[in-house]
Amino acid sequence: MKAELIDVNLNGSNSIRIKKIDQYYLNAPFHFHSSCELVWVEKSFGKRIVGDHIGNFKDNDLVLMGPDLPHIWRNDEEFHRNVKSLRVKATVIYFPPSFLLNLVDDPEIARAATELIQRATRGLIFRGKSNQKVGDLLANIDKDRGFNKIIRFLQAIEILATSKEYDYLASVSFKNMYAEKDADRLSKVYQFLMLNFSRNIDLKEIADMCNMTPNSFCRFFKSRTQKSFTQFLNELRIGHACRLLQEEKHSVSDACYESGYNNPANFNKFFKSIIGQTPTEYRKKLKI
Image (tube, rainbow, N blue to C red):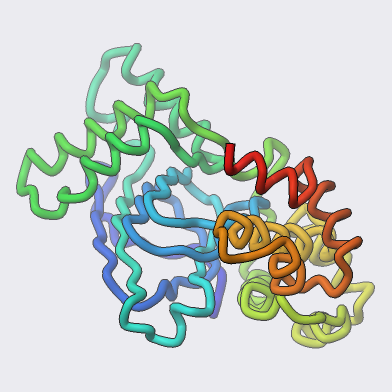
């Protein structure tokens, strides 16, 4: 798989593209493009990397990503076994930033659209009533025809532009440093780690994938992702642990070992460092 600038097949600056997804698992590579991308996950779960953000996605997630923001969404391993009870259902809308700005000459509306796109350069995840209202609009947008489809899309954008119910994904310091000559290496690394994070991973094993020495790989990885390899791997593992802790059937011990930690003390240390509380405190807060 190659992480690269891709064409999302938009015809001109005044068009949008709506894609309905209904398949066993997501298969897009690590990539970026010049369009904005609005994603509503009706049904699915897995891991998500957006810029330097590493986390989980789940049913009803609503994310807006600005242009040139590298990202990959990968389902957890259960989906790749083609289990009939597991399907990915999602709606994705691609639109150029100029689409909104070219529609009106009202300064207030233009400012709101510009600010939304600017915020989306870091990736935005929406929650609460904003999430629910936009999800309802996008659920059947593919069935609309003509102006009704555009109207429904603009109603969704208006909700997002005025919403305060959002969190940033990528950090404020993130800059897209990916070049075509080395992005393929990172794509392979990301895919490998999302598949194998739960087992012991030797740094040399990863470096060999990139035809680098361990020291060279560490410098390369940090210069592109703005995270050390160890930090990245721990964030991926702790993110998975958080998903497990949200389910009553998994104990804290389950979350520890199934996330790739062999030592509960290390698990607790990294969990508190990344999440700001211990696994037990995290689970208690969820119950409250």
